[in-house]
Image (cartoon, rainbow, N blue to C red; front, side):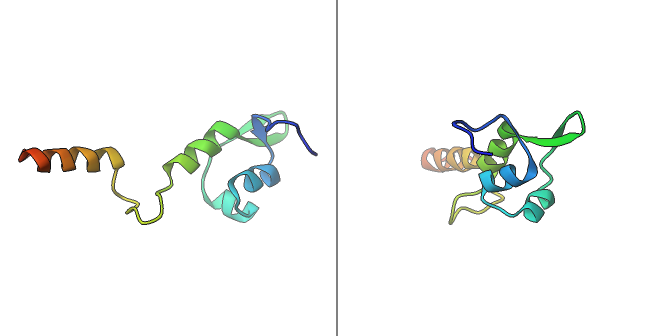
Length: 81
């Protein structure tokens, strides 16, 4: 089905395409699904939140960007914590 907009709730094939992954990878990501009758659908906001949490290329995936900024500021002013 083609939409003029991205619907809020997406079935697995559309949710996988939205994130650019296969359906099997989508299931492995552990993103919660919502129930609408017998359907299990992914909320686009949950998909966006997952994408937002991914690290940028070259950025260590276990370092928080805000923490990096605070540490850089502390280092610049000689603050020791």
